[in-house]
Length: 441
Image (tube, rainbow, N blue to C red; front, side, top):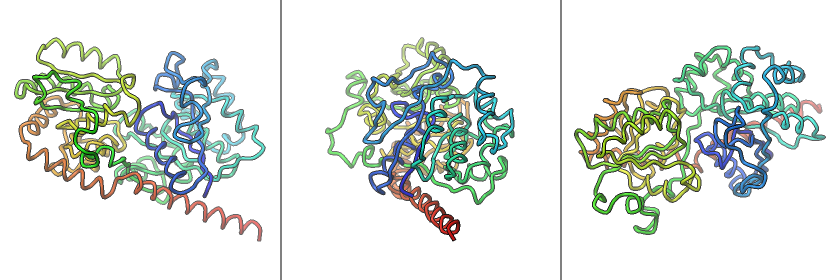
């Protein structure tokens, strides 16, 4: 298997865990395993743009449009001009789509999620030759996964998906929607918990699923990898001089209800009742609901909040973000919409304790009272109590952070994760060679 088409919903400079995962695997397949790798994706930057022309898009004149870290990117514009019925009619006219035998309700839902890539359909259908041996796509339930299946049928190549299935979010667990997952040749689940759900609830055969966790660039976050004083000083730049000894609580992700960002804001008043010298740093794209709650919390003059967005950063490895992980005392992301949570690994690589929600796959990722704490989802009081406990106990923070760091270094570096992917790709290569021999005999 030497030629792979990666087909994510979005790609850098769009930022989220799913995009970052696909970027790092694609880069390592090329650099460490000599695969020919190309990326096909939409021109969307934020989630709004997947279905709304009012969202953020990347143009052909911008940096990173055609290439990111030496990888060729083919970005297809989203067809906002077509109405829903036109999209349905067009997709249903494709012979390979008919072969998939998917239900109409599923198609309706996925088309509503976007991004509808008419130009991608036209491009691939006019190719004289499909030069890829395998398609790897992500994530559920967006249109590019349907398109990947269509291409797999048309060009007779296997299609792999890493769905990042958010099985704690009810809008993803409708039975008609999960039917599409059974059509893939292989699913890569992030945890055993996700695999169990995909088999028992979604009905995907167990033999079609492999478990591969997420990874981290350990040395970039680990304090011991750089000499002291050689990296960006987060507190020095953002805290007032007299507040350098204040404790710090960090969140990194979409600032919405699903990720727990709004619950964090609601927990702040409870925390300040017991621990006043603390800054709250929240990094990630904002939402209207978050901004409304933030305006309420800021009315308390004792509240110290540093609010950063992707516009303030240069990407995944922005020096401010990395310094924030290195200098924080606690990493807090009480989310219900993570299939794994790469940011937990980033915090552990920096030797920090983490707090996540007691829901979905997170209890498998975080070992409660060993490398972090688990809290009830959307429970500000429970969140506050766990934060206060860690803020007051330095030895406990160090123990949890050290345990997380050891686990991450042993099992979750990107080179380990890339090697697991390579072994799976090689199995497909052997099967393709075997099938080719059988056809010719």
